[in-house]
Image (cartoon, rainbow, N blue to C red; front, side):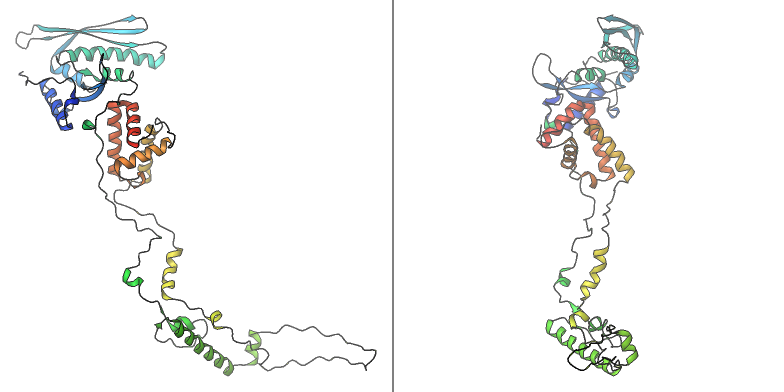
Length: 411
């Protein structure tokens, strides 16, 4: 197999763009005989040994070592273990054969260790298997001759770093792009949507509306403009018509039913010691309609003017506001699942003096995506969660916390 020659770059921070970093990872994949589409390698920030600062280095993702072991024909000769203080140490030895003669061509030995202090049960079993896996993967990566770290070694180093993302550079930062708005404007209840040409028109008041409560026999007439002088004139005409109709159609029985006078008390007989005795008699009740016809009420109390615009807007005031829907809006079940996944990162985000952990996460999502969480679509939620998982896989949760605080300008 002829390998394409390329220059090994130990610190990829010298590359200016992410495209250059991806091109270098493709060259590494081609050099070891793996297709670049496999996405077998990635980059991570690591502390410099014996010097301050960090370097952007290449590491092999999970599963890459097993693929290379089969691709390069690596055979494991032995895998032994021993205890050194409180750590278990595995030693793996292997070789590759010559493609023509089949004889051993190269031998390699690698170790993998894990501290077992105070571990019990499943945690102890996982630590033993981790040490064994490290030994086999480090043995495999040594045959690539590139000095590439395995993912198990990267995680072991990150756990000892206080802030693995402290040296992050903007040139290679994979922040999500600003999403383009895909929803319609909010036309919820409470916003005045009356067209401008209708808003400046005078209100029209019909005489039919004005006389509805006074004279049900009056015929509706043509509407007129609602100036104050015309309204007063119309009210006087209605008042005169009402008085004339009541005088012509007056009858004792209907009038008595409409307005019944109160029953007067029977006066007591008054006896005077000076004047001759007089006895009061019951006065006959008059049947004329003059005493029982109520005077006409004032015009404003009979029929207050009602404008057409008020009648038409009344149902809008009584109706309950309906929340606006937008394209791609997640269902309540999907939104609950998204919030559950985000809460895993929010629970590890410490509160600042001016902001709580929930407020910080909401502000970071809004600043990063350009939308509030309740206004994001299903596609935007999926892209955001994928970015969170990828960033934490590279820089761990401590790196995510530092990045959020840096973006928001808080501590």
